[in-house]
Length: 214
Image (tube, rainbow, N blue to C red; front, top):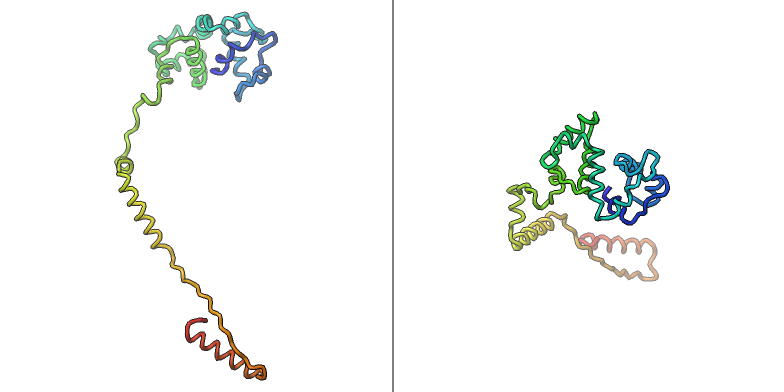
């Protein structure tokens, strides 16, 4: 809805029916293309066949937009304006008026649409002002004692704590044993038979084991 009223100043009065295809052709980002035609029909901007009723141009011009849209909104939602004082009514009050006037189950979507139309029409509503209140002006939830303790610590204290944690992680890491490579040259006379060769190799292997090198 916001995108529609922002862009209507650049969209000429349609010469064809305003329907879902028309909405998609203008690239409105909405999961429900039929919502805009339904809204325009409800406000009598287009008729039941989607054809413009002649107020489109007045909605395009900033000087006449609010007055024209205000009249359309007050006519379309006459039972609501007759039931509550919009300048003081809460969202719950408006919801009760919707339930009474239109016999609908969940009125939340309808109320959101109604308040948005009022905003674009320059109609002041207490419920709309409450919804658009800046987040910064709303009371913030107090931080817990633990959160304050973390955020209020000095940088040096936080750095020291990180160092302690890193040191503990290093101490808890499984130890590793350094590996050493040992090369052994064994001289074997050319005239030795296999029995002497095997005996010499066995003696070398035993010496390495005895010295913890194998």
